[in-house]
Length: 277
Figure 1 (cartoon, rainbow, N blue to C red):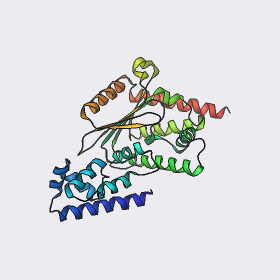
Figure 2: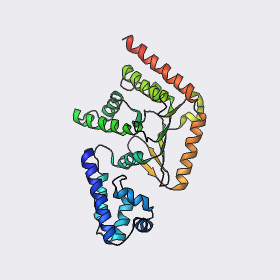
Figure 3: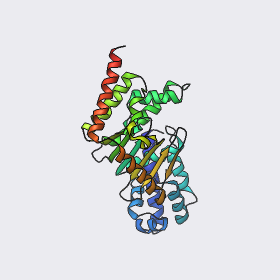
Figure 4: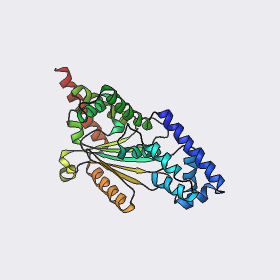
């Protein structure tokens, strides 16, 4: 679904929600209380600022007695084929987050990937797909990174395992460009990045990826991912454990300045490999 059609669907959802709510004689605050969110949250749905979650859409249908229309609309909004089904909601939450904290064990996080790196990762996982498929996936990944360019961008904290620096995804040239991109963002203070070195010992043995997201008007969530699946968690106790795990990794990581030095050193290593070939 293209950006324009997604936005149109959001706007239709919002307009329909406002119409049905007013027909029921309810304020945003009253409806929010019935579906366990704030009135401001309902307002964001109606203004097409926030994409509703499926469970909230189902509760809205129940309260307003709308015969499942909002659930059906919500499922249509979530169905963005550019992303895996388990990840589509995460993309929308990234756009609403006030802070994102991320740990990457093996691969540069999607929000930081360059086109060449994203293409190499996509082709490696899908070696028999068409060029159009690869372009669609790469474009979608680059679009996600737009949130870091916005003046109202979220705080972005990222801890990279040293593996991320050492595995030559896409070859030396692509890696040099990729790591230089991260270094530029660090120098421009658009993110807070650290590297978890091999010397961190047992801390450096953590596998998988972890993303934590905070919001102004909603509880924090955690997202974990492996090669073929991902899990979005909003249980407060589990999210708290995930936050503690991230804090422990961050404490074991190098300082931002030492991390930048290591990243820049890796850039030079890859450049030397490129010039020698």
